[in-house]
Length: 239
Image 1 (tube, rainbow, N blue to C red):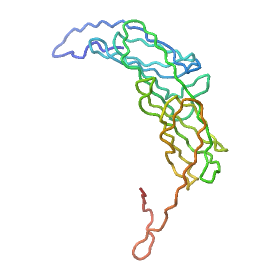
Image 2 (cartoon, helix red, strand yellow; image 1 turned 180 degrees about the vertical axis):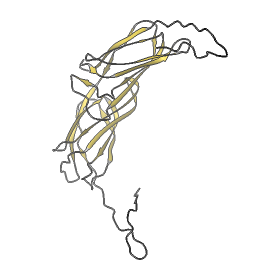
Image 3 (cartoon, helix red, strand yellow; image 1 turned 30 degrees about the vertical axis):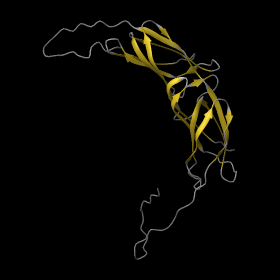
Image 4 (cartoon, rainbow, N blue to C red; image 1 turned 90 degrees about the horizontal axis):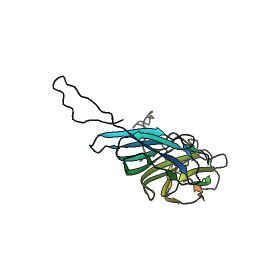
């Protein structure tokens, strides 16, 4: 797919013949550090031809982690996006809201090009408890990484899990520094509050990260008029 011109002026009937450019195959494998293929990763290849016209394609890795797309000669940016709950033989990257984006910039394509990606994952696990050390189930635990990664121009990734009946959680995350970890207790735990428990979790190996969910304080009272009559359906915002 390509843009053959960006400056076609039409002020009368005209003939505009088009030569469809021949493309080059950009292909490769997306795997984890153990060589396991990452399936269902969306690969976007977008850029410009030497004359400034757009060219690009979107493909998805297959069961072997293989992708293949055809673009015109030019310079490209390649994005890998795992929003579709990508998976690997080493373990499915489960959970809603799971996505990743890696960017390889300034990729010159003048012939068929092979470009492989290797992504490094580690397990983060632990127990979620309240301030009294009691395990708390059904807490949403989210790890978020944003910014420059030493292996890629830019990365943006998050993954989540829910603590089980014993308060335990486990997920796989990409190797990265300065993860933010946010916990969101279930609605029935009214004294536990949503909070960021760290903004600097470095993950360069499998690790245990236990979490204490902060306890909150109840602010309550009545809203009445000057005669003592209750005022119903008044929204109270405490910020």
